[in-house]
Amino acid sequence: MHDNRPLAIPLISATLVGLTIFWALPENLGFWRSLAIVSGWAGCGLLAASLLLMIREAKLAAWLGGLESMYRWHHRLGVSAYLILLIHPLALAASGWAESPALAWAMLAPWQQSWPVWLGWAALLCLMTGLALALSPAMPYARWRGLHNLLALAIVLALGHLLLLGLDYLLLWSPLLALAFILWRVLRADLGLAASPHVVAQVAHPTPTVVEVRLRPLTRPLAARPGQFVLAAFLDGPGFRGCGEYHPYTVSAVAPDGEIALGIKALGDCTSHLQAVVPGVAARIEGPFGDFLAGRPAGPEFWLAGGIGITPFLGVLRSGPLPDPVRLIYLHRNEHDAAFRDEIATLAKAQPRLALDVVACGDRLPDLATLLPAAPALAGHECYLCGPPGLLAAAVRVLAQRGVRPAHIHFEHFDFR
Amino acid sequence: MMRKLFLLGTGVFWIAILVVWVGSRWLPPPAERPPTSAGKQFTMDEIARHASPEDCWMAIERTVYDLTRYLPEHPSRSGIVEPWCGKEATQAYRTKMKGRPHSPEADHLLTQYGIGVLEEP
Image (tube, rainbow over all chains, first blue to last red; front, side, top):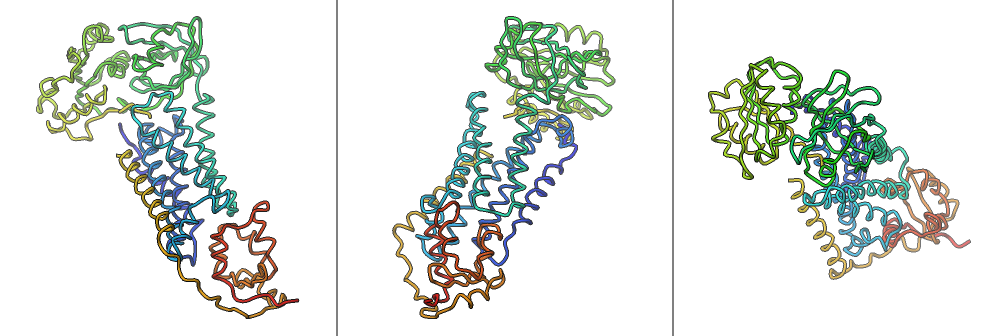
């Protein structure tokens, strides 16, 4: 992933936190009371920054270095906000501790206080529970998504906490901004107002667990390039009931008339169900996102594809002759799992600059030390990798051992939880 | 990494909460401080001369408080408290937010700012 603006997100976050604290910075207060106020507002600023990064807009994503970078920072800032917000009640208690431990406890116990403190605790507990669930990697996607809403509820409760405290209205701009970002995300992305309507024009099954869907735009075509990805939700159609969830899929072909193709592997409930999609099914598409394989510098390239990770490379091969020499190693489990193998072999014959190796590796992680080119054959190459996380991690390790610098290794994690 | 930080922070938080609770139950309460200005009496006219945020006295339940130092600490916006400077504010103090009184913690804080009592009419 080329991160064109590595400082954009930290700068925006620092501005949001800095402005919030500047507005609310207490004067002539004790240390603990000041810390309580500053931690509360710093947490609000960080939450607002985290929620800005949840917005899925193609232009914003391109400006902020890509959706992957945004989601990574969304996690970092969300957890940082939570950790800083934990200081808020503890510092309030600490401010009363010197007077008496009973007073410190009275600061925390909502039944000794009133509605603002109840709401503050409810917001913190929602944030705590929501984050605990959001950070659970094993949770099924649909449940994970539903419980993620607890985090949005935490913002609403926090706003109630601040309103009932009777704070200066000007101070409420950061929680209101956070709420606005949530609404933007829900309306534009989750409810699909930003999505472009498409219809499934054609369906092919390169393997029993992969479907390639060609989508015809019903309005203005997307300006997608091969190697980019879109977020697509498949709805209902003739004899097919779509799951309606937005998932990321790589663009495997772009036609001059705006028709795009997506390669979809059965990896979860929704994508397994999509294997039965038929022409005529409605779809909504957001994007395009990502710059994998975009703006590649001139010179020799090494491509490594694992399984369905072949789709971005397929998109480039389909789009025309390669300008530079490319060595492509396509790893798959077995013959039944090798999506597009025959088509790639045909394309390779028409691409004089392409050297192709198709390797069946079975169910175990292949021995990349043997499969990947030796150090001299990688010198001066840009390396592009696409495949499952385990394969990517192993390949990056081997390439680094062979002297390829990180700046010349390009990949996307494709993990949007 | 994020998961580890979350678990660590949450664990430390609940331990700290537990420490505060245990302290409130088992540590001895501080000795009662004698009122600093017991017996000193003020009239409403005198209190009314201290009616600005920079010099803010209030009478609450017949006790007179100099809340000048406390005003910056009060969580509400200034428009809620400051109009009561220089006035008898018992009803306002008792009816915070739709008729509910202040918390015991606020009552305790208030005692620190007492400077005397309201003169009998």
